[in-house]
Length: 585
Image (cartoon, rainbow, N blue to C red; front, side):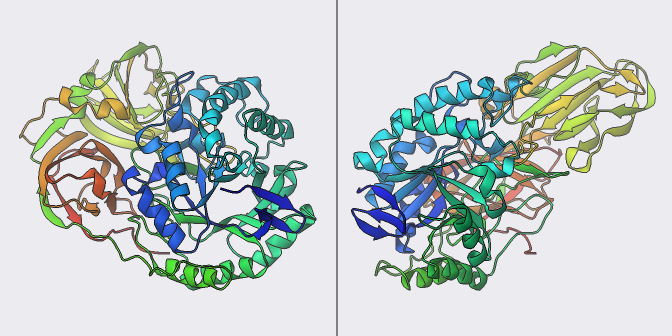
């Protein structure tokens, strides 16, 4: 594709004026079987560009390890598919991306060094960044517009002005790494209007992010950047949800008016999100602005294209608005895809997690509880075991739990402590000296934005019972990979014991199609279908269903496994044609 150039009055491609009309979609939040479909629908809405983050934590899950670029992480294939749709690409490789993604895309192994200063010039941070870019950039060079590919511009870091770190040398170093790595297309930064002064660099295009008030924010951008293109790099057309809140929805007419205001000003735009997708598995992030707030599994975002890839009213009014300013394909708005409905799927087998945890992970013994980072673990749960020193009533005190601890005495549930509620203590009865204390701690998502980015998981600090510190801990990491090793478990048709358990069943599908899994009466846990991790469910809501991509299913028999963290259940779930994302605010 022709190269993008920046001149005083805007963008040029092939010497002709060019306006970027883009939308964000994240390949890592979309089943790869749907990539081509989502890109085609982007073009049909009138977009000429798509905007793509790159999550370091998935592409390099192990320190010093190779770059993972297969399956749902095959970024080169995604870029090829974008080019096949004649879509240009704004690439945002981070290394920090925010995106309501676990740790903002930073790998958990960075936290193994308690002194590393993230997103700064600290060599302990810069050296792994250099190694990562050294692996990533050679794989994207052929996709740059200067090599005939679709990538017309690359972002430097992400909303750095909001970090409060003020380390411009860090940003400059990233520019050097990108240029030395062969990235010879234009570079840009993006920040909210109040952060433009701290987030940019001389000679690098600044862009601004906002939800509404386009004229005011574009005017602020012009004050910081007297010449060059005006661009909103993130026009927030919707918003994300957190557990325990309501579902965010922005009226299509209100979002349309802001999009029209941007385009009428002659500015370029990237709609965040065009298609949100799903935080499959354990990948959602969290926010902590004084209170820890984890993000839900769905990243529907009230976007023009919904979680299942179907056009919404917002898609239609955006298409009409774009058509006022640019050519839109003459093809009709795509129809919704087929959906599957199947009631009363029975999960007839179960396996206790506590009784069989040793089959899923190897315990490490320590005088104190070890964090996930100390165990070399990124996602999932840690199971902590020790004994109580005395019989009788007492108070269990855990100074810090990240993020949710379920507590058991001799295998029986006695309570829960949640970081979100700042809970630290629980009264319980020890039946005898030497009674077994078990604590299951869940990583509900690392903080992805702001000062709380260094977000370790597990238990920290001395754990005491009735004032006496507990020692001799067995710490068993239960990672997503180990939790999927279900062949190691002994399933039974008997009703599961009290406490967390896996439930397994099969169902028959005549023809695979997208669907939504509903779990009425279930409390909290994770779901896998045919080994594919759908993500977390939680009766707290707002989300009450999980999106199931059609390519996950197969004709004939399919297997479903539910890890229910709160014990006995009747074991019935449903597949429905429509989602339940909860009541709107």
